[in-house]
Image (cartoon, rainbow, N blue to C red; front, side, top):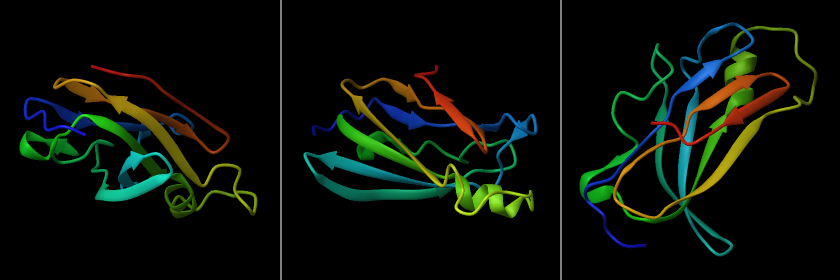
Length: 121
């Protein structure tokens, strides 16, 4: 991993089942090297389903392989919906690479039985 101070990492979580931003959803960021995971940061989404600041930026941004883990189960249980036990989706890991100093936006579209992601802008 090399320092790439011009880059930043952001996310946005939308609850597609309710049509609302997923507020209060915990997300952990891990740096990945082979089979090794090192926790870099933990954040919680705000009322808009976003983080109050980029997850990584400035001197903290480094190129390399990462994994965002979205704690969807905790969020879904907190809604009080009638859900199966165990949940179909509990923790959602998304592994991705950041190869250059640019803006990486990794959104999550979430429902109790499915999710999707993409590289946003």
